[in-house]
Length: 97
Image (cartoon, rainbow, N blue to C red; front, side, top):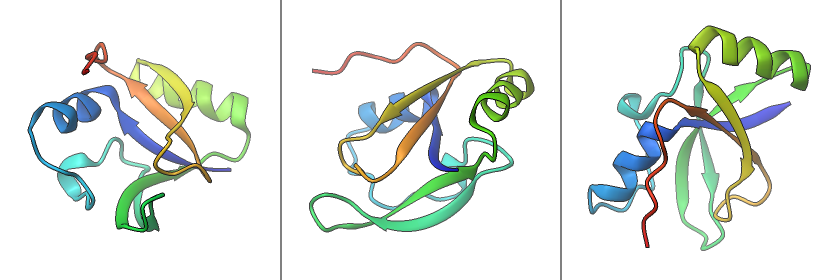
């Protein structure tokens, strides 16, 4: 199964740097297994996001958790409703209002 993947530290950086992040690059690579893919958000913008394939969801998520020694959050991203998203929880997510 293909998931969007990121780290909570990357989300925090993107939410606090004052920039609009359509295109990701090597600086936002969350893990060695991630690959970059172009997708379109709900507003029609061409974006790039990192993805990962996990064949067996439960054991694949557990393997990822063990490899990166962090909890893995499974969620949806309102900007990309066709994909499930994984977050490697390497730091507390900041609450930005």
